[in-house]
Image 1 (tube, rainbow, N blue to C red):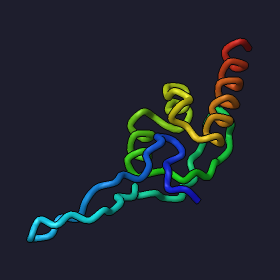
Image 2 (tube, helix red, strand yellow; image 1 turned 180 degrees about the horizontal axis):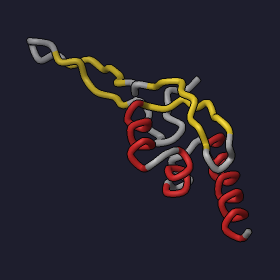
Image 3 (cartoon, rainbow, N blue to C red; image 1 turned 180 degrees about the vertical axis):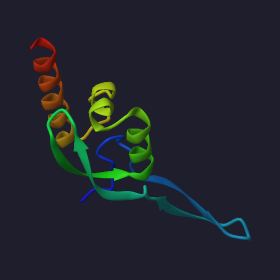
Length: 98
């Protein structure tokens, strides 16, 4: 399984370990990913996603999963999150029309 956040697209970064003698060796910095269950109010169901802690704080700051999906562009989202975004948009459009 790839180490990429499903909501923000945050992945691994590459850098150096630097010794006291200033020798540099390659290393990777991995995002802090958590398996979380987020509640979608529009769909009235819970969704399991693999999200970075930064992404989780961002979702809570915006006001929930539905608001995050509506405001985020599809390029950053994973395939599962894109499908979820379409479902939420369809449900919200149906509620606005009724």
